[in-house]
Every structure is written in C-alpha cells, then in structure tokens.
Amino acid sequence: MPSGSPSIWLEVNLAAIQNNIRQIQSLTRRPVMPVIKANAYGHGLVEVGKAAASAGAAWMCVARLDEAVVLRSSGIQQPILVMGYTSPDRVPEAIYHQVTLTVHELSVGLAYAAQAQSQGKILGVHAKVDSGMGRLGVFPEEGPAFLKTLLRCPGLHVGGLFTHFARADEPGANTTSWQIERFSRLVRELEASGLRPGLVHAANSAGSLYFPGAYFDMVRPGIAIYGLEPSPEAPLPEGFRQALTWKAQLVSVKELPAGHGVSYGYRYITTRPERIGVIPAGYADGFRRQAENFVLVGGKRVPVIGTVCMDQSMLQLDDVPSARIGDEVVLIGAQGDQVIRAEDIGRAWGTINYEVVCGLANRIPRIYHY
Ligand SMILES: *Cc1c(COP(=O)(O)O)cnc(C)c1O
Image (cartoon, rainbow, N blue to C red; front, side):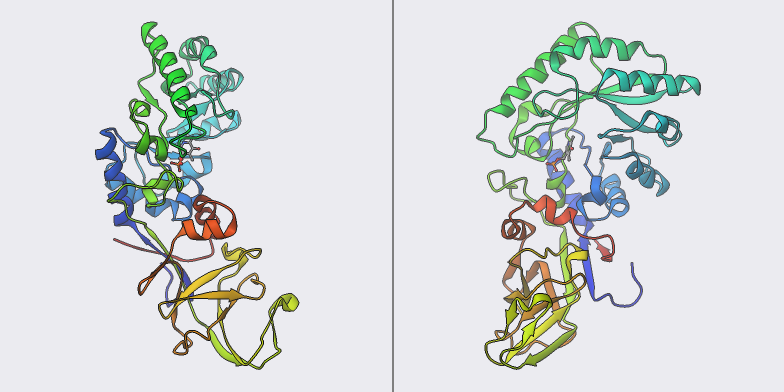
C-alpha cells in the first residue's frame, strides 16, 4: 500500500476474487487451482495468492518458476504448478521451493529426473498432453509410453496429468468436446494400465463454466476468478463479481483557446475554447496509445483526446463543467450510473479483456480491500 495519496491506482476487491473462486467450487464441485500467472492477470500476485489460499484454493497455477518463488517467499503453502517451460538447470530451485513443474516432452522429463537424482531428491511434476491446442505437450497417442517412462524415473514424482483447450470460450465450437473425448480416452487407458496420475485437470474458466465433461479431478480457472468473462459468447453466470477498478485523479483542468493543439503531433486541435483535463495515465501504465479511449468523470463518459503520452493523457471536459483538479476519474469500473468494463476497453482496442488487465503496469499502485 502506497503512503500518501497516489494519483493513479488500482483498487482490487479481494473478497470478489474469493467469492468467484467459491462460485466455481460450488458449480464444479471440484477443488480449484486458480491461475494467478502474469501478476494475477494484473491484479497482484502475492495478495491474490493469499486471498485465494484463504478462499480454499487447493493449488495455485502460474506460468513461470519465478512467479512460484515469489509466492513461496510470501508464505504461500499450497502446492504450486508451473504450467510453462522451466529450464532443467532450475530444478534444484524448484525442489528447494517445493514447486511442481510441467513436463511437456520426454527429453525435458529425463533432464529433470537427472537433475533431481544428482541431488538425491525428488521433483514433483505434472505431465502435459496436447489434446488439440497445438502448443505444449505430447499427443494423446504418445501418452501411455510417455507416462510409463516418466513413472519409472527415480527423480520424479508424477502427481498430475493435464491438457488445455483452444476454444472453450466459444461454447458453440465442437472442438472442445473433441479435445475432451481424446483426453478422456487417454485417461481411461492410463487407468486401465495403472498409469493414471492422481490429479487430472483440464478446465480453464470457460471449461469450468460450460463443459462439465472437462472437470476431471480439479479445475484451473484464470479469468473468471477476477470476475472477467472468458469471451462475449462465454459470459459469467450470475453471482460473479468484477474485482478490479482503475482510477486516477484529474491533475489539471484548463481552458485552451480555439485552434490550440493538444499533445504530441497535434492530432487534436481545439475548434473553440475547450476545457481540457489531464490524467496521469499513459501508455507506460498500459493505457494504449493507438486507440480510441474514454474514461468516466463526474459520472459521465468523456473522450480521451490527442495522443496518449507515456505518463499522461488529455480529456475533453466540455460535458462536465463541474470537473475540478483532484476529481476522481475512472478508467475501469463504475462511476454514477456509468460503467467501463475491461471487456469494453478490449473491444475498443481490438483485443480481449485478458490483454487489457495483463497490460496494467507494475508501477501503478494496487490498493487491496475486502
Ligand atoms: C492461462 C491458462 C489457464 C487459465 O485460462 P483462463 O482462460 O484465464 O481461465 C489455464 N490453463 C493454462 C494451461 C493456461 O495457460
């Protein structure tokens, strides 16, 4: 928590995140392993990790070992899965911090095993299957031989098996059922031959909300725990709450005469005397430069005009004659009866809500509340 008043900040409602985790728990009736990679989708890794732990998260998932180490250093005791690639020379670090790594191909598994064995230790791993994402993992057909070899490695404990969906956020696409079918067939085969790891998981947020066949032993939601929708076609059910609000202060309000340029390149020129405001939010904060931006001031939606600078942006305030220095400006969230959602910004930027929140810079102070 910053001391003194910041002029740009994020408010993160941790109770909303806990509520969303519990919603998914009760919907799926499975232990939840919340995905808190990328600084918890911009919300703040450590605080979200602690809130998730006290909401009953069974595991935590991150993309990189460094993220797992930060969680351990902050006292998180839950098992942690690193879903992305980790170089074998970091196995001692993973073992030291009791972090579970992903094995997505045999050569990597063997290198992990060799590292662990040379220390006389055991590394926990989950095996990754590519059931159709076309990213990390072995194909389902290779699964039995892959598991058989990994299970024989003395330096490894293969505690889990997982896959990932390419199109679960398009519930109408039939490829998710196809992926579930391929993966399920593998799981049955492994079961039959005594090779099934104890924890099988597949469902991201959209999988958790729309594909009960994908629940297996645990679910692995990311975006939904923040109260953000997986996609417009895969909205959140009732009961989920958005956790993040992005605010700034109006730090300048002044009237520019007609014909006055605003910001770099003079891409906006006043056509009459205009009231122009300044907020300390720029592209270095994650406020996109090549975009049509808008914010809320005095309960009204106002346009961002001129080029977004690195640290500041200008607003056209003619519709808000009451606006004064120090007023609160909302970039994401509600003000009066107006709302700007991360989804709205994503649409305006030609991207998705995920990229909007992941782009929120570390330099913006996060203020946490319950
Ligand atoms: C990011 C990620 C998730 C979470 O996806 P959401 O769509 O945010 O729920 C789950 N599993 C893997 C492997 C991921 O990379």
